[in-house]
Length: 81
Length: 81
Length: 149
Length: 149
Image 1 (tube, each protein chain N blue to C red):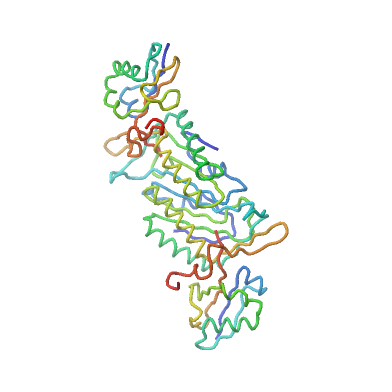
Image 2 (image 1 turned 180 degrees about the horizontal axis):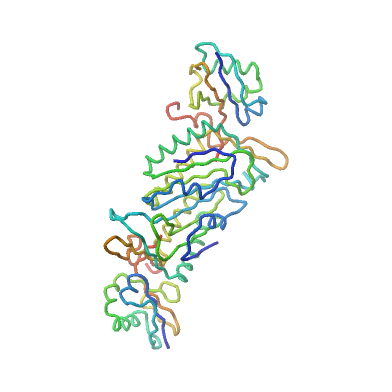
């Protein structure tokens, strides 16, 4: 099982990466995937207080369960327009 | 002394004319010029309650005195846009 | 500032270019378009008449007032005259400003004032007749400047 | 409905054409433009990043809501990404409606919602540095849908 993580803007700059695959365990939540992401990229920790999350292009709470093959996007505060 | 009278839209259609010169007497007001215009075009009488007047492209009251060589415009309710 | 009464087709790019400024963060553009109906009656086409010299003068006055009231950087107002088909643009307004709120508020105010005060008239042509619209926008003295009310 | 995230130049004529309707009496167009300054600091240029698939999905949701709330006939929303120079258009919104008031109100509401909810980010580049803007428009949970607040 895997999850594709997508990073943007300041978060992508900090990680030096815009997309990666992580192994996924059945029943894992967004918060659990984020914890394992932070092990690999501890410099992303400072973004956690302001991040939102999207699973397959839909905003979700970090308690949402991540399905196999899903795309999890880390969304820093938006500034389009 | 003369005044040029300009007519537009419904008023021009009713008069069959968009521009005419009228002789002008020293000190005549817009209302007096209008009275002489109505002698020539009595069919314009029905517009009088809704007309505004402009002298040389400036809205004026019908008590304004018409200078020699001025342009007097009869302005029915506007409907641009 | 660009103000123009013309029989030619109105081009949005021209109005946008006229209000461009390196200080502008927002441009609002309004197009008044010929609708296929009015008050549930089918419209074939419209004919606009204007007093062009005075229309442009009043437009300039309204634009000057709008720039001051809404901190606009620049404005363009173009009105077309003559016969206009369904879907064609009769009125084109562009405003530029630092931020978006003023561009919407200033643009909206401009359209309202133009419809009240500028000597332009429209005639509706239907399948079986025609009539000059003496609009609800201007009822007699309402179109006169404040000093005359 | 037209929604698009693209690296190409945004063309106002395209947005206007996309919302054309014989029932439309008003079209409002909004351009978000790159300003030469922000908070009194000189800006050299901007770089926009986006999550394009989700940005277009959220734009479609916002457009559907706007059409219902403001009785709009149609909407177009285009956002550009990549490096943008001063004066270039980053956001282009067009709405059409029967009458002018809805076109202004609907257009203004659309811009506000887009700036709050759509996953797009801007980086300011100055003479001596650069920074991703984490805008006052979206402070943490404010950008989440109502169901999550």
